Image (cartoon, rainbow, N blue to C red; front, side, top):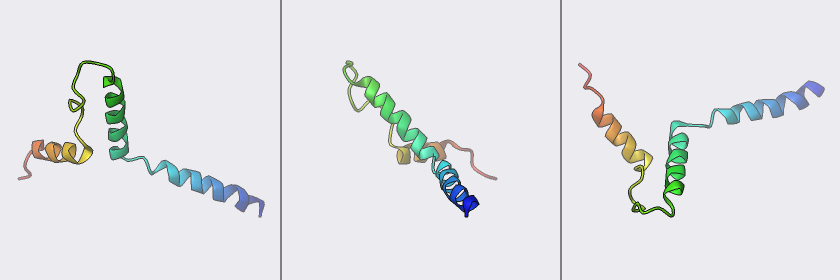
Length: 66
């Protein structure tokens, strides 16, 4: 019983660590850049593109498989 009480919350916390994805990291960086631009003279649309567009552009730059 005592081991179960400790193991279940530990397992729950460890599975939460795997939820951080590249999309989440990219969107956080995008949000930080957007927040830095507030109050400056740069236009608001001059930030990083959305993750989906970023992935599309990135896949277009990768070399063709032979």
